[in-house]
Each structure stands twice: as structure tokens, then as C-alpha cells.
Length: 252
Image (cartoon, rainbow, N blue to C red; front, side, top):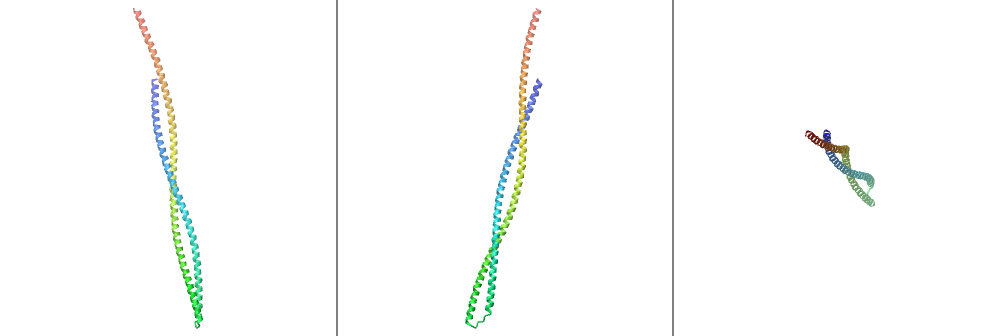
């Protein structure tokens, strides 16, 4: 009985130690889970921020692209207008040349003819003024076209820059998602380990309770047996006293 009691006590102490170790491991796993949850939340926020920036960049890129298309369309219209003006200028030049040829073939002995020549010269001057105005208009349009070309070049550079930045943002998001996925897998593994640890903890607690109950029962049995032994000892002492008394009477 004594050996059995010692064995039970030893087993209970070992289970208590193992239970304490499991509780410490359980606490460590809970802390690790909290840490992973915090890191995953931070990564999720970072991904949301990057996605927001990416959406803004995409929207800006689309706006710049539409603006580029509009400017290119305006540029085409301006070039067509310039061609039309150039054709008008050429027509005026041809008419001017014809008028000059005609004026050279006219002799000037008569006053009326000289008057006609003055009218022709006046018409030529008016046409020259029109041609000059058209040239100025053509020059202005050419300046506008050059300005539009410059804007197109700047927008194309901006578009290239935005496309490169978009690629970098997408790569960054993919890397963060990869890290987040790894952490989620590790967190899942930690949760599984935590669940196993909790199950083992519960099993050991049940086993410990059973052993403690068995120890209480064993102690009770030992106490009962000790009580019975005390009673037997008391009876033996009474018998010894009776025997001694009888022996004394016999001796007398």
C-alpha cells in the first residue's frame, strides 16, 4: 500500500509538471497567434493602401490617356486646317502671279489704261494683305500644333512613368500578398498546434483528476485499514492483559 501510494504521488507530480509545461507552451502559442494576427492585419492594411494608390494611378493613367487621345485628335484637325490654309495661300499666289503676268502685258500710253493698272495694283495689294494674314494665321496654327506636339510628348512620358510605377506597385502588392499568405499558413499551423496542445492539456487534466481521485480513495482505504489495525492491536492488548491476569491467578 505504501509503495502504491508513493507511485501514485510520483505519477501525479510528473503529470503536474507535464501539465505546467503544456500550459506554458499553450501561452506561448497564444502569444504567437496574437503576433501573427497583428502582422496579418498590418499587411492587410498595407495591401489596401497600395491597392488604393494603384486605383488612383490607374484612374490618372486613364485620364492622361484620354487627354492624349483628345490632343492627338485636335492635332490632326489642326494639321488638316493648316493644309487647307496652305492650299488657299497657293491659290492666292497663283492668282497673284496671273495678275502680275497680265499687268506686264498691258501698255500704258492711255490714261484709262493707267487707271486700270492702278486698280490692278490695288487688288494685288489687297491680295498680298490677305496672303500675309493667311501666313500669320498659318504661323499661329503651326505654333499651336508645336505646342500640342509638346503636350503629347509630355503626356506620353507621363504615361510611361505611370505604367512603370503601376508595374512596381503590382509587384509590391504581389510580394506582400505572398508574405501574408505564408504568415496565414504559419498561423493556421500554429492554431492547429494550439488546438492539439489544448486537447493534450485537457486529457492530462482529466488524467490528473482521475489520479487525484484514485489517491484520495487509496488514502481512505489506507486510513480504514489503519483503523482496523488499531482495533486489532487494541484487542490484542486486551487479550494480552487477560492472559497476564490469568497467568497471575494461576501462579497464586
